[in-house]
Amino acid sequence: MQPAIDLRSDTVTVPTPAMRDAMANAPVGDDVYGEDPTVNQLQADAAALLGKEAGLFVPSGTMGNLTSLLAHCQRGDEIIVGKEAHIFKYEAGGMAMYGGIQPNTLPVQPDGTLELDAIRAAIRADNPHMPITRLVCLENTQGTMSGAPLPAAYVSQVADLAHEHGIKLHIDGARLFNAAAALGVEARVLVRDADSVSLCLSKGLCAPVGSVIVGSREFIKQAHRVRKSLGGGMRQAGILAAAGLIALHEMPLRLHEDHATAHLFAQEIARLPYVDVDVTRVKTNMVYFTLSADAPMTVEQFSARLKAEYNILMRPYEPRERKFRVVTHYWITQDHIRQTVEAMRTLLTAREAQPVQ
Image (cartoon, rainbow, N blue to C red; front, side):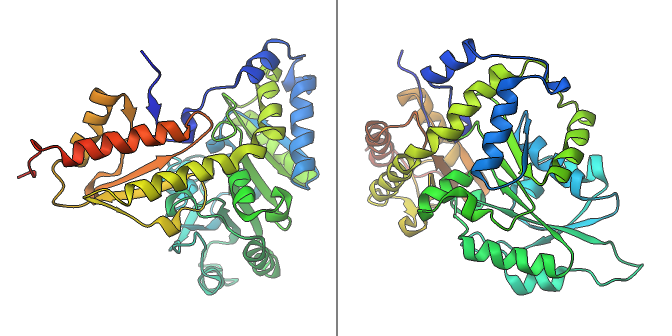
């Protein structure tokens, strides 16, 4: 049986053959003692690529964000963050659970930004009745807004605003290299003024595990202590970091291919009945679309039949809104897209298909 065409997320990527070879032959040591040469190389390279002083390897993007928040904030502090941001919406309330940190959420605009005036208005006054605003968080790309890339000029404006008030800026850069590819700039340009950045290696960059956070040496020193308290101290982690080095240096060079594949998918499904998609919003590797209310099946039925009849994995993203999210990645080719579009066409136009009552 052929592998499934898996469009659920770029988290489903598996390591490339080059990564597997590197993992098998990686020099290792005890990273808790700071003695794993491959981990040390990954951390140094990530920091250098993003223009920061130091880096820290962590098992996941969620731990990378949580570690950063806990390194910046004290219990009872407040962060300003988008209501649709991954940090707020999809990380199990970790900031509150482990750090006693309060989120002050703002609407995320269709282009992935937070309005500057809204950020300014959300910064707390120096008042003992109020929490201290300690941190502003951005997400680049903004996954919930069709993978929108945030331009460098906007990030710098947010950083300037934050720093004027003595506040730090953290960027959840889970797909930062996708933003860089879409905007045609080096990733370091997009985070030049940020105080900390988390970078995921296991999404479109194909590493099996891990993220890196970068920032000043003092920030990373504090983050290292936090990582240990969260159980993130790994031992011979160079086996994982070896794949991360390839992810960091080689995989960003091809991300434009994933963006082109996503755009092709959006263009093709725009011609299908019962499908509503805004092709102009496809800037990176994500496509959001909805099935109309008069479609011949529910989103759950549509997803189930794609899987059962065509071995295509595409799950509803917001079932109540009849919405799907498709994410392209290294293992999705243009042929896969054509097969998927044809399968969708067949399901949506079959004679025997009857509107759902």
